Length: 189
Ligand SMILES: Nc1nc2c(ncn2[C@@H]2O[C@H](COP(=O)(O)OP(=O)(O)O)[C@@H](O)[C@H]2O)c(=O)[nH]1
Ligand SMILES: Nc1ncnc2c1ncn2[C@@H]1O[C@H](COP(=O)(O)OP(=O)(O)O)[C@@H](O)[C@H]1O
Image (cartoon, rainbow, N blue to C red; front, side, top):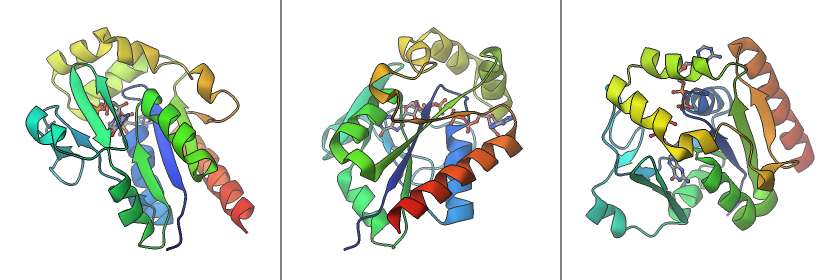
């Protein structure tokens, strides 16, 4: 089988990770890797499409490549789902926290293309979460969590490795993402 790349989208809550993952799927046919979580689904989220929604017991039975605790809930991804994506002949795209991005870099090396999203004004993150339809209680919990504050900044382990994209203007973001995809694809040739 032809193993491809996995584009790992990391960054703070509300920074646009899911939006960028959807763009990479729509524009470049990348396969979205659906990860597992024990958190409750949000309005408009569907099981098997946005996440595989799990109970702590069902999460425990999975064979995960890596897993993390984020804002009191478990999240994890499997090697099997990466391989299923590559079997389509396309690259994969996955949305992870920065701890997961570090693990992917350590385990997969150049096969993992890390994109770290940030914004110029931190306050816009909470506004985007509210606009997205998150419950206010969930937004407050997120803003209080140490993981949210940790993921505002690029971790030392990914300095010089991750492609940093400031997602203030969507048109500038797509330009930058297009440049990254072109560079990676020219390195493959
Ligand atoms: N390490 C890791 N992180 C994950 C996984 N699935 C989701 N995440 C991350 O967990 C964090 C919380 O995700 P979510 O509850 O959907 O909140 P959001 O960032 O506001 O969209 C985000 O940083 C996700 O990227 C996974 O399988 N592994
Ligand atoms: N450049 C941008 N300008 C304004 N809103 C944006 C931008 N990028 C994403 N959004 C919006 O911000 C909200 C959060 O984006 P999302 O992709 O869900 O973030 P994350 O997955 O990182 O939590 C969504 O409603 C999305 O449509």
